[in-house]
Image (cartoon, rainbow over the protein chains, first blue to last red):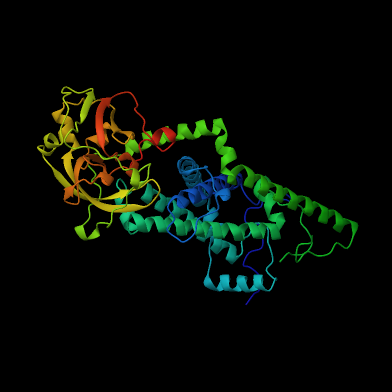
Length: 221
Length: 253
């Protein structure tokens, strides 16, 4: 069994000798718009949750957006347009360009187990432009969480007009909890995502400029 | 502070790289704290009038989208008697000990605006009209929901009796507890929108809006005004107690 990820070369090298395009413009743009939308939705959503919590805790007001329930709802129902339209653009691009197929697939249990083990023993090489199996799994999982948070959000926004969707999620009250769970998944992903960027900061510039920073000797755990 | 797993710089080149990555880390840190400042401390952002205006504009846009999504023939789900939430929660902009006691004997429902017949209605007059019963889910803007049973006059029947202009845009309500609200004509004419006189088989108790409340199962709870003393048909946007403070006006379910 090889101990290296299946692919270490950038998938679509733009022929720059040392600075290939790692993230195409559409991916970068939708990434940052999505980041803004998710921050708005989570922070305002926490304030909405606080108005009628169904778990034995509320979110600290200082972490929420909107000032009061009405303000939070305004942010939430404005932010949803950004989240959804940006998400649709990304989905369309992801399928049409082959980004999903090429960069997120395949992801097998064996590969995830292998890369988790390598990461745990600090031997997982970071190959610019190629995602390891754990990354692939996490990106797919957060995409599923985002789809779920949008669908459950629609279900609790329009439980009458979109009743079949609400019923599919187990009714209004169940859909509320699905919405919360999906949010938790996204926030959990964000914690890991940001922690990893802090640990491997050279992954950040390519998401801004598109290009890798000059290569460094040696791998980083 | 050194990050784990970072090789110690062995040369000038290494130092330079170390500095560069430090710069990047600082950039990231500042980015995060800027994000936290502008996005997470809501009050400062929300106080900005431009932002407030933009959010208001989006809310008006959402009114239009919801009006387009509204299907006048789609019924809100109904439930069985066993599913009724007991006790049904009290909710108002004041506490339960401040509930208004309206005198049913002297009560008159005033009618005005774009209608043919402006005479006022007693409770008995309203009870003489066809009555309908529903067990539906009341969903509060706060997120909680409760299932209740209301009966009363289908609002479209009442609107036809008073000769309300069907092309008018709004129906507004003024309440004995100083609450006020308004709904769109399409929702007003929805088959499940009723002028409720009874709750769970008995005369509407004061806490649920005696002698009459609007029951709209296709809208959020705050669009179901209680103790209605007057209603009017109009083309001028009437707003509402919460709507004027920023709750979305259409607030359809």
